[in-house]
Length: 222
Image 1 (cartoon, rainbow, N blue to C red):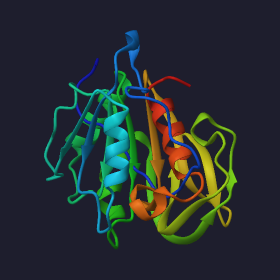
Image 2: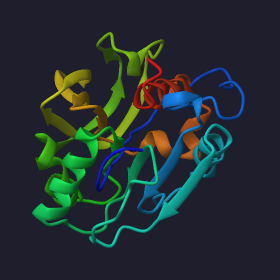
Image 3: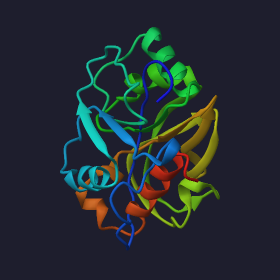
């Protein structure tokens, strides 16, 4: 992977009535399987099904805790950020933007803890995206985009409004809850909720389809 430091993934909730195909379905330049890093804890509820699915469809899945320090992400192609524990300084935030500009891709899912938007916003500011407010319901309004192909409804439990640069790909009550964008050679996807990471949602309609769309787009397959 080209680039310097930092990448992030933020996710919410969803489901799908099919099993995504085969091992190493997500590939990077040259056809090599994607190397995936997840940063942070998986949250308060079981989320093993997502990890198992990601591991089956990438060549490498590594999880590390978030401690607010700079991390070298250059050995990975895609980073998923789950449950940020600490705020990050401007140097880490700029490292994230530089890594994406150089070709890294990240996704971010939030609302694991009350007011954790502050920790996310210190990083997301570098790409011009911010989280705020509080929304609850089922997302049924999606904009046509590779990350939402075939997705009709996704649960959203106490998540955030997502505003800033990029394309708004979903709204709830007229408020944006998901943004996908490109920066230089890289891509990012920011979702205002974490429910799509939990086992309880994996069997719901459209959640796994949502994840398939997100991962394919971050891998530059769509």
